[in-house]
Image (cartoon, rainbow, N blue to C red; front, side, top):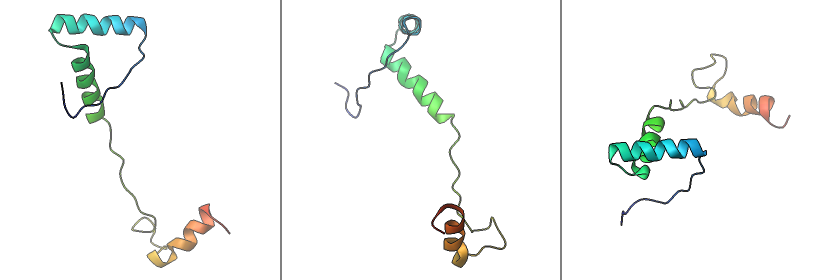
Length: 78
């Protein structure tokens, strides 16, 4: 039994499932191992979102004290 893992069910097209099983057989690995590796690679290569703050350096005319009015004017109650 493997600890620290959770079970996930995937629905794959038949041809993808077949290709995955064949790859696992050729590499003498489990399908689960190939899926984990593929997901880890995919997620590692994803761009991470950059954090931004309203009114901190993006606009010379807007200070922290003005940010509440700025947000209300653009997205909130008027």
